[in-house]
Length: 232
Ligand code: OAD
Image (cartoon, rainbow, N blue to C red):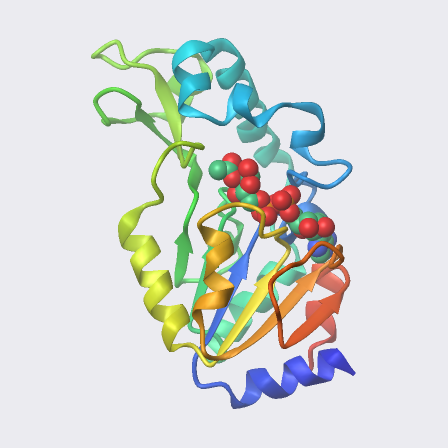
């Protein structure tokens, strides 16, 4: 019933924005952060995902991101990512805004993607900002300025990429449908986005119990299964 409602809204919406989180990629084999099997159950994010961690405990920071980067070789986007790309080609969605750093939306064919937490697939120097090769990061080399190399992700304590953030806010404000997929919405400021639209809001997630934001429609389920059932 509720999936039919989503289908109807998608068909009539002139401007649909999709917002995704780590739950979008768990069915590809990438753990999320806050589920029972998520990263933050075993690792304190302050020790690996902050500017302080990078600057004061580089070996652990490096190990964590190296592991995540190397894991990407073994996994691939799933049908859910492909369905979103197909919807974009059909003109059903105008933008995918994602907190994910895996690049799977683009790999699956989505063109209009804003990576609000950056990307784990490119590397820069933390000190001078110069771009560096992935191999140099994996081998724990330093920049020519002797700065530490790091992935282009947003760490806790850093600002979101401002151009992307502004574009997403503008799109959400204009949207008449916002579909939020696979995120706990615990992390600021992305968790503010669903409240910024005047359009309809839909939440697709496995765990819907903790949600404090009001949605017009909540679909409890696995991303891939839910998206595969949407008939356009
Ligand atoms: P979380 O791990 O906080 O939330 C993922 C949500 O997806 C949970 O509510 C799960 O129940 C749900 N989920 C998992 N697998 C699913 C599936 N197959 N189908 C449907 N739902 C599923 O991840 P995010 O909300 O993305 O940031 O986390 C936000 C940010 O916190 C991340 O970008 C990362 C993290 O710390 C930084 O590191 C800066």
